[in-house]
Amino acid sequence: MASTTSGTADGWKAKLNKALQEKNFFTDLLQKIEDKTGVRRMYIVIALAAFLGIYLMVGYGAQFVCNFVGFLYPAYASVKAIESSQKEDDTQWLTYWVVYSFFALVEFFADIFLFWIPFYWFLKCVFLVWCMAPIASNGSQMIYHRLIKPIVLKYQNKIDSAIDKAADRLQEVFGKAKQKVGDFAEDIGRGAANDAIRKRMADVTKDE
Image 1 (cartoon, rainbow, N blue to C red):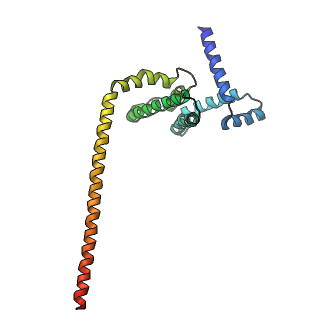
Image 2: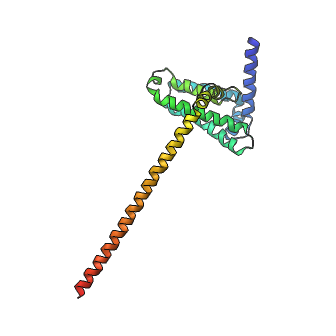
Image 3: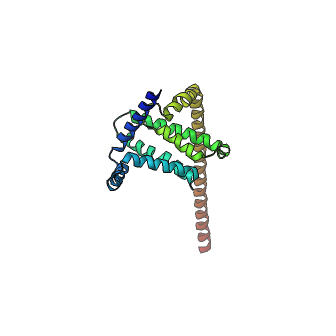
């Protein structure tokens, strides 16, 4: 058991260290801090994570900070995935956004209950970090394959049918609205033409 835990921790440490060696704005900033302080960037990140955790529990604006964390890096990674030629990272971040949207929907309706959970924004941030974690079975993969995917596949035909009916209904409504606008514009044009004719006839009668 201890060896397994140690192996998992070493694996996490290796993946984190690899991610911190990538070339981007954040790692460039870490490089400057590392050069000035002499502290390894991994320890700097761990310290920042600890500070963030404490702030999410007692700090002001924890909701904004939590949502910012859950959006910023995934958005950046999604852009990189779009620009890359690999398919795996596209699937990874699409899965994350599906889970993120599902959770946001649940959170919207359950907000009145979630408000009473102690340190909710800290727990939510931990949850989002778990969902975006660079491991094969992260939170996004587990929630998608065990919860969202079975539900969607079960009701897929009904959902598609409802979407098609809604699209047809909207097309019908827009068609009728377009027709009414055209008729209204035509009536205005006719009215303007009739007013011009009447004005012309009045001018002729006045001249006589």
